[in-house]
Every structure is written in structure tokens, then in C-alpha cells.
Picture 1 (tube, helix red, strand yellow):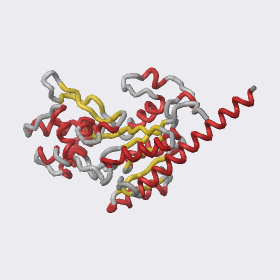
Picture 2 (tube, rainbow, N blue to C red; picture 1 turned 90 degrees about the vertical axis):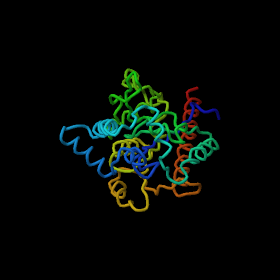
Picture 3 (spheres, helix red, strand yellow; picture 1 turned 60 degrees about the vertical axis):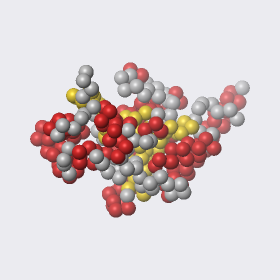
Length: 284
């Protein structure tokens, strides 16, 4: 039977502590400015509290301030170069090809997106950057000399949710607010919420995880072996569908789980096709 619409399943990822073990700034940026990770984040928090400031803007401000103080270049290229030092979780580099091929075997297309409060420029420098249809993350504006001079985009735990709406409606351009806020019926959406799988690691992902789960999609809280206790409350409080260890390797528990979800979503799509076809036949 011919499909009534193109079936697409979106896998949406946080980045820090979801695809890699720690905040991306901790791999090389923070050491390069002569600070310890705990010292950097404590200072960023202090700035936020003192100025009643968004914590994401506070860390971006501190990055610029500290880099200038230590003569560390703050160009887009220098930030992108930091991406090569990010250590991804086991199996991440081959994850996308394996999952894409599995989706293809079931007649569905898999798309991958990043929704992160980390720095887009660093993510763009990682070896997996090309795997994503869109990377939504914090960005700097760069002046005529190519140096970062202002936050261009700040993504915190609540603003992340707008990107779920954009992806669902197919309105990926962050400057297009008209289409984003125009009423759209469920059947017109490019990717229904039921076709979404969200991967996050903790409280900063709760709004997205809960929203995806609430609207029929699936949310997975990722943890490393030593921090399972941090995500167990998310499952207990029904904010996520599953918790799973951060191993993206072939035949891992996570791969098995995600494949089963994709299989279920593909089957639901097929049932919907059949239902629509039968309804059309009955109309005549």
C-alpha cells in the first residue's frame, strides 16, 4: 500500500553528558584558560546569582571574559577547533549509520537533531557534526575582525522546547516566527510528536522530555554507570519513558531499546495508513 505521507522519525539529542561524558568546555577550553572545571562553573553561577542573570548567558559571558584575559582566541574557528578534543561516548561515532539503516529497513527515514545549551561552534568541530539535520545550541556573534563580541543565541532548558515545535512543523529557520506560530493541524505536521525520541541526561532536559512523552513520543534519560541515581527520579516521577546507560555500541541496551521504539512507531504509521485508506474506500 502506498504511504499517505513520508514517514520520518526524529531523534533529538542534548549534547553534554548525553553524547559525551562531561560539559564540552571542560575538555580543552577551560584548561586552556588556566581554570579547573569546578572553578569555572562556580564562577559562572556566581555571576548569574549576583546579576539575576540567565545561567546560560552567564557562562557565555565568562567564556568571553576569561578568554580575553588569557589571550585565548575567541573566533569561530578557534571554538570549532575545540570540538576535536570532545570525547564521545562509546559507539556514538557509528550510531547514526546503524540507526539510519535500521529505519530504512522498516521504510522510515531517520533524522537527527541537536538541542543543546552547549556551544554550537564546538559541536560543529566534532566528528559527528554532519550527522545532524540541524544543530540548535548557543552561538556567539562575531565582529568584523572575527572575534566573539556578543551572545547571538542562548538556549536554556525552557527555550529548548521551541525547537520541538519547529521540528514538528518543519519550520527549522530560527528567524521564521510567523510559520512557527501559525495554527497547524496535526495531520499537516512534518513530524508528529509521536514520531520523536528525545535523549537527555537530567533536569535541564525535563521540559523537552516531558513534552515529548506527554504528546505520545518517547523520552530516554541517559546516564553513566556512576550516576544512575540522578536519573532514577525522572522515571519514578513519569517524566521520561526509559532510563538507559550511555553506551551507543552495536547490540547495546540503548540500541536495542531505540530500535524497538522505531519499530513500534513504524508499525503505528502503517496502521494509520491502513486506517486512512479504509476510510477513503468507505466514503465511496
